[in-house]
Length: 473
Image 1: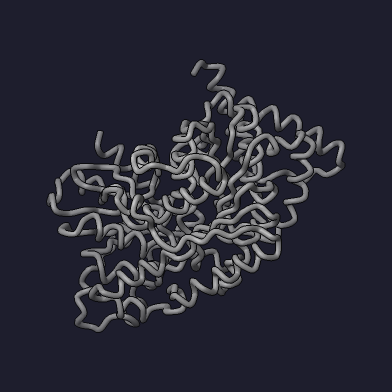
Image 2 (image 1 turned 180 degrees about the vertical axis):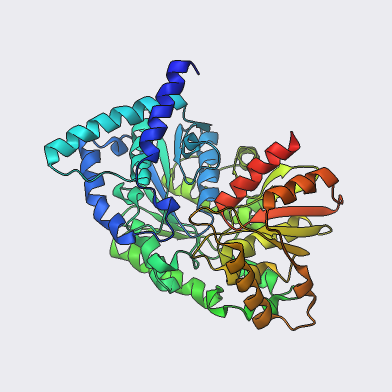
């Protein structure tokens, strides 16, 4: 980039990062998100409704939605479609949120578009007589829709940021809506029961457009985990946050009722097909296969007359799936992986995937998370099944869970779930400074049969990824 282009990009970032960003809040003002939707709709209308220029797939879910989005992007591009992909959060560079045909949006294209939209919004505010600003995420969505319209995409895939009903992405009318999963997360704003959380996510269903429901993988996960030593002990901690077969049916019923209310055809995923099951592990574990199955169904529902995906097309498309901080290997020697697992269900899926991938290796978990998360549930899912858990904290950032609180939560998990002589108690260590630990870890070349996995939040995964890059230089 030239100096002029760099300055343009810097000014665009400066504008965007000065907007209110709920992603950095300890508690998200969900009611305010609801109030903002009308203003956001009005601004899109002021812009000529750029979202009307392409088909839209709208994807919500507690976990798996990022993987489904990336998988669908790869499958549609395998059919020759031009695809826009809007996801969050970004890991290293803001433009990761805006992908056009498999590539990040160009920084200059992004900056010129955002700064032009900022000038138009000033005119919109003046005409409307309302000076309330859009948030960071709302601006990101508007930019994405305009970028996709200007890039003349055929399909835009929109990942919900939070919930569904009041998320900024819900200003768009989808051609297909999809719910990947429902489990306990953001309970302070979405509800304390699975039925309440499911209702918020099913809020993206608001027309007769078809709906794909991928809720059900937890049944496969529970069946496998139940056979492992330590499973019963883990379930003694926060049993109400585990997902049973009855819970799955409750959530499916919520989605079904919402679809029926709007006359929307509903397609339920019940199993992994033989073609998808045949994909190799690694990189495919059952969780990723399930999410690819959801994506395949979405693609077929969106384009019912398109030829079916052959096993070879599926395999080739699968090689294109890029998932930053989703079981991403950031070092080969020593083996270090990062994952954004940040609730009980996603940690359970991650641990199961690690056991599938590394059946004969020692698995160490480096764990840090954020305020408000189900720390006890996450630790209960990991503790019995891995060889060591290293407790740490991301930094002194506003949302980072302090190490002393993490230690207290861990002690309560051990006390409630595991006897005094249980070997699980010897697995726990405290790492005050994860960066110093990683520098030493890379320097001393640990055993070749050991795998280190950093989990607990996308932000922690990104921080470990960045530290690993520096340490490997």
